[in-house]
Amino acid sequence: MLALVVPASINGLRYLGPLLGETGERVAMIAAAVNMPEEGLDMLRDRFQDDLYLEHLPGSSLPDSQPAPEQSQIPFAHPTDPQEQEPEQAPSAKTSPPTAASPNIPMAYRAAIISENFASTNSVMLVQHGAGSIKNESKLTNDEVAEILETPMGIVFENTGEPQVLIVHTHATEAFERYDSAYYDTRNNWRSLDNNENMVAVGKAIAQVLEENGIGVIHDATQHDYPSYNGSYERSAQTIQSYLDEYPSIKVVLDLHRDAMQRENDAIIKPVTSIGSKKAAQIMIIAAADDTGELGVPNYRENLRFAAAFQSYMASEYEDLTRPVYFAYRKYNMDLTTGSLLLEFGSNANTLEEAVYSATLAGEALAELIYDYME
Image (cartoon, rainbow, N blue to C red; front, side, top):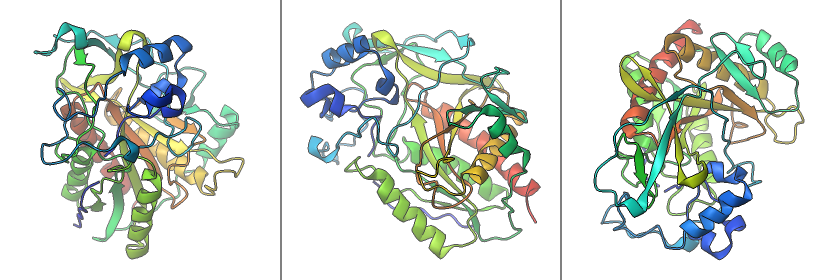
């Protein structure tokens, strides 16, 4: 079994600098802010008057040996940038009550964490496929999307020790809440250079499961988002392409992230479910839509079939583990190969333990899928 780990590189959440002026150029924003109403933007302007990148703020995971990044090194992505924008989904009606507050958070810096279940439902707004579903944000009708999925997934895996799965992290330094709590510290920046605390740890969990099942996997731990967030996808594209050139046996490329969602009054949303008496961060797969041809993803149909199959395997084995597949005009390097997907593991409100547990379950489902589609 092949497991490569390549050195490091920080991310942040989702960025909204152009909308927030000079103050916004100093603050890491979350994805949900892109769709915030005016009052939400006003709240954010008030909230982020101080620099969040100070190493000594509670919740900051930047190690003492690393200097805090220069603000000019982390430009903000414009909300319309299809490579940097990530979606927020409306929650289902299922919710779970929060747990007790974590200790040592001054009242002035406490805000709520809201646990919600975003799992697939039988909503007529979704395209049902197997045990899962697809949220169609393309110009295709739901019937046209369903017609694409009538053709079985065409990716065929091989009985070989060569690597067939590549795991990368465009935003490797995305990190999680420290506590399973009803509250979080508003000074937290939810990012870490420590690969034991960020998305690299999540990728390691999937890679380990695949290796244990005899499936060749490369796990690249490069922090493509540090020290500069801007250009993360361009850098990860170079990494992916180098592996594809070196290992033509690779059939699947997974770019692992964690989402971030915020409501009014600073509340952040935690996509979570319970599987086997343990909390698991819910997983959302993003698949590129390119029916217009504008994104340059000619194999988007095959990517969608793989996304739907993967989600169905997870959903059939682990109820409520997945959110609906998000099928939309997002490129995210999916033009480089078929079997190329972006996966969101929970949000900044989930704990690392919840995300790693979900990654382990996702790895088991992926291993089963690979063996079912093996020559």
